[in-house]
Length: 433
Image 1 (spheres, rainbow, N blue to C red):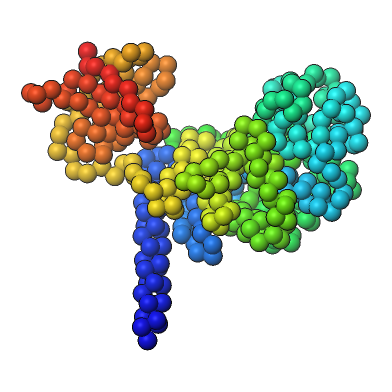
Image 2 (tube, rainbow, N blue to C red; image 1 turned 90 degrees about the horizontal axis):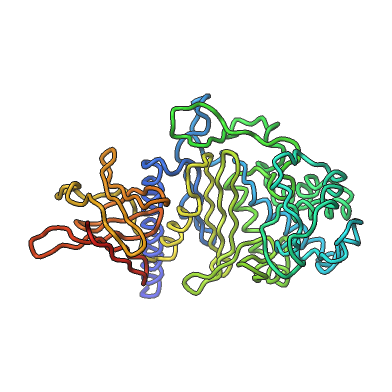
């Protein structure tokens, strides 16, 4: 009986912890939504437990529809982990080798100097085609002919530069090996086996009640929607559309080994250069290995963060460019890992006047102007823009965009004479003019 009671007590404690986290996460996202800094869908899981799965805001302003957890977004560069996964699957089947040179598949100058592994890790040095405003929507022949005319940015393997060209090349290699279009290969080898029924390509042609419209700033009065890329302009570098639920299926397939072996995953999750592995951005936090990727272009900002060792997945999808999916992801990660966090905009009752904090403060290398705009305390550093300061307590404010505390200092008479910027162990003091 005692053992049964212990099990029941533990289960109740775990349920209470999950409910507390869910409430905290919902408050965090709601705060960003109320401040016009987020509009989208959030899905957070740990193991089989869903910590948060909720939609916030508008799907289409013209149609006056609201987002749901089934809403479909362009995920842009989160396409890259799908491309890298497909390449690694082909390598597992011995249909290619990550150390194959491009000359095995294409004939152009420097093709014999670049290997597939370097395409996956953005270390190939290929010229980035998106630098040219008139690049259009190249097909395979025109793309190769285009690349032939461009010099390498650096010796392959010697440096790092984010390369959509490299992922375009990977898409063409996939087509040569599979005999299918890149899009069809992804559908047959990943989407269909995982039952990712709400994911695909050619977003401009999609007709679905759950399709979202993208915006530069969904919170302004304009009804203008962002450009929808058609054809193959983003291709293997960023053409996939999906839902939060479908992306979770992808995460779980990677966790379970359904797509890749432990050895292949180890390859993918190992840094090559600049915190990038094979199709994933990598970093460490709280002694845990983070595996993630973001996506962003016309109308959308997206992020997918995973901690494979903990089976944690955080998915943030927004249909407005005026948001920081990465910032919100970081906040949700703190809550998930039981780390201290601050919810901006949850201001306690104001007992002091904002006016007392205004003025010009001089640091060694810059001045900062603190003023009041539309009822908010705002800080402006020359050439660095403005940021809203959110109240923690009297005399202490927080700049969410900078992840920095602004601490006002007083003299013996209670007059404000200084301002200290505090971020971690870094502190900069500015004297009031």
